[in-house]
Image (cartoon, rainbow, N blue to C red; front, side):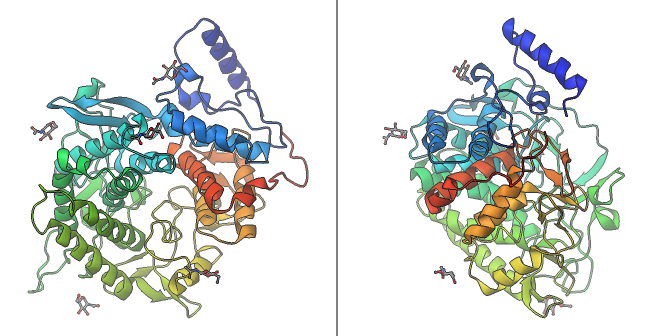
Amino acid sequence: MWSSNAIVLALLLLVGHVLGQSCPGYSSFSQMRNPPLSTGAYKLAYQRPSPECRTFNSSLVEDALSGLKDEIYDVDLYRLFENTYPNTLDTAVKWRGVAANNSEEELAFIITGDIDAMWIRDSANQIAPYKMVLKNSTDKLASVFRGVINLQARYLIISPYCNSFQPPPESGISPAQNGGIYSVTPPYDRNIVFTCNFELDDFGGFLQLSHDYYTATGDADFFGKFQWIEAVQSVLAASEAMRAATYGPDGKWIKPAYTFQSQTMSASGTLANNGVGMPVNYTGMARSPFRPSDDSALFDFSIPANMMLSRYLDATAAIMDQLPNAPKGLAGQMRDMATEIRDGISHWGVVKAPSGKQVFAYEVDGFGGQNLMDDANIPSLLSAPFLGYLDKNDTVYRNTRDFILGRSNPWWCEGPYINAVGSPHVRPDAAWPMAAIMRAMTSDDDMEIITAIKEILRSTDGLGLIHESVNSFDTSDWTRQWFTWANGLFGQMIMDLADRKPHLLKESFQPFFIEKD
Ligand SMILES: *[C@@H]1O[C@H](CO)[C@@H](O)[C@H](O)[C@H]1NC(C)=O
Ligand SMILES: *[C@@H]1O[C@H](CO)[C@@H](O)[C@H](O)[C@H]1NC(C)=O
Ligand SMILES: *[C@@H]1O[C@H](CO)[C@@H](O)[C@H](O)[C@H]1NC(C)=O
Ligand SMILES: *[C@@H]1O[C@H](CO)[C@@H](O)[C@H](O)[C@H]1NC(C)=O
Ligand SMILES: *[C@@H]1O[C@H](CO)[C@@H](O)[C@H](O)[C@H]1NC(C)=O
């Protein structure tokens, strides 16, 4: 339904456009059904900003969009692809430039959406989908990858325990206001850090993006030029500190390296036990007091975040091997930690489900405590093959997948419109399209992929963008209008299907009946 507010806003935008005024904010633009609508049953809006309002132009991405125009049969599916794949470049590249003390060092500041702050995890995932079109280090798209990696490296050296950051001083953009009341160790500078939730997948995200850039371009030299080696050392040191057990050999409590308390109404917005979290035993894994949803964990050893870290420490050790200026033994240290984490996952993370089958737990504590669930945010258990940690056919993964994609998972959301994993970050019944995308990306079964895509396509409320969550029973009830990570992931899924299963893009994804608009 069009509200009168939306109509007034649309008129203002039209007038603004005619008068050549400044670009509309994407927060409001993304909530309107901008014309022209697609000609399928879903009548999806065209949500790309007009060319002069886009934050980065890439001919490689434009070529990918036009290249698939004739390959995708369903007009609504094409519209969703065309809106989503470029969304990060279109809307979230807030600033690009070079470091004040080194004009060779590119920097790129990428916002998650309506907050002018850069999340390590989000920015890694926001840029990753463009690896599908990146072929060498000379295209200007490669400079965005390098800019993000360099800025993440700077942040991870300064405050490795923090997760979202302020614009670099070079940008001239003022730090965003964060009025939250926090007590955190180690302390941090609010002019540099926006929030300081320690989330292990930030390390995985940084290393994953490094691996993506290296794999696409073969450019190893880049990693020896600026602060990447030092950032990896910082990541290793913090991971090492976060492996420590709660009790020392003499039985005495050892205060953890990281503590966090905040004044909040939400139980998942702070850490239990006065900010130190629940006790853990030594497992070889590293703690992640916060989840990839920014919610606090029940038990600190996140299996998916450790899978991601293990996989990408191992993968990026191959970059470190090639750097003449890397300290001796550093690549070996990365591989050792990767192996020890993998062993910890096999030993502590594989548990017996109520069905009697062996599955991966979502979180454990090394004392036998285990949390059986999955959360939509990536890294999730569902995403384990996507992370490259294991093969889709792995028996424990197959069992885990059966567990996750059904009522046995407390965060499974099922209803007439969309069936997907949700997250305690929102509420029960709020399915996350991101998890439906991940289901399709980790499946070889054509029917399962088609069903997931149909559900995603009917879940956008006519807006033609991927929302954070959608009520399984009411698609007009959704959260976050501008979630560029999820948009990019949808685009990546289509690009992946174009390679892996092009015949699926020839299918119709139209509903059997015409939906009311
Ligand atoms: C993108 O291209 C349009 C012209 O098509 C231009 O107006 C705009 O300034 C460009 N954006 C950037 C960030 O260069
Ligand atoms: C350059 O500046 C960054 C950020 O202020 C700092 O972290 C880094 O150590 C500096 N590098 C050199 C070589 O001085
Ligand atoms: C790098 O990639 C771009 C875009 O794909 C292409 O135009 C260019 O020729 C390539 N350069 C080299 C050196 O391969
Ligand atoms: C704690 O971990 C140690 C070794 O890592 C193990 O020997 C011990 O059994 C664990 N404790 C419990 C209660 O599981
Ligand atoms: C996985 O299983 C499928 C069907 O059982 C089979 O076709 C495929 O070759 C297997 N893949 C691997 C990597 O073993």
